[in-house]
Image (cartoon, helix red, strand yellow):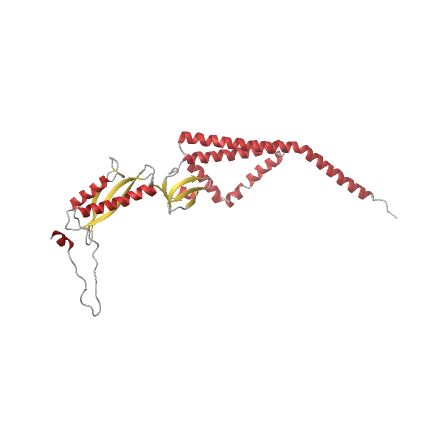
Amino acid sequence: MLLPSQPEDVDLSQTITETTVSYYEQFIAFIPRLGLGLAIIILGILIATLLGNITRKSVRFRTKDPLMSRFLGKAIRVMFIIIFIMIALRAAGLGDISAGILATAGASAVVLGFAFKDIGQNFIAGIILSFNRPFNVNDTVEIGDNFGRIKELGFRHTKLKTFDGKDVYIPNSDVITTPVTNYTEDGFFRWDFIVGVDYDDDINGAKATIMEALNADPKVVTDEEHVNYVIEDELATSTVNLKVFFWVDTFDFGRIANTTRGRVIGNVMRALMKEGYYLPADIQEIKLYGRDSELPLSLQDKRDTKNA
């Protein structure tokens, strides 16, 4: 025999049904606001991207600075996307959620500041570098132990391409606190090298020969501000060492500057030898121990042979 339904069971079933219907109706009513919020977010992303691109192109056109323009373009885009997300939440009737997000962000700022201290430092350093920095894109720089060309300035790092093909990402905080050597800011760099001539040679004549070799190279820069010269540097054991100073163009440091230096060294060596200057090596002392008492070598003065 079936027992009649308990009143409690009827009330529970009815409550579940009414609650489900209520949530369903609320969801149906919320769909237009949700669609409006999503539309605002999508439209906001498009507008933020457009404003970011306009900012990037405008700044680049006015300042001719690709690093600053790219950085400011990204910053404007991110800022407007956040603003449109907040507007979308309010339009969807979720203003309390947006207010809660802001309140939570403010309350957790201190905690996040300690947890992500390095990220915050790099971001602030990136902002500083976007307005005041010691390099531009494609400049040849040395930052700490890293040497290469600047390729990109991001929110957290600066990208550097080394001359052996490595991509190095340097935290912006390190760029701010580490000495930066820029080899191409004004486009000129001074090389130097040492060449040794014999004590019996005409030192002034050797210096004149070296200067002729420098002036003959089209890639060696010579003007009023960039003067090339040769000086006596050291009285070594077997040579008088002359130090050669000359300027080169460094806008293409990795290839032009290095090849110019190598070519100049070779030209100076050939010019001195052509003029009869003797380029001796350092004197080496040989000691014989044990039973060997004679050195099985014959020595000949090349200058006497040539003059004969």
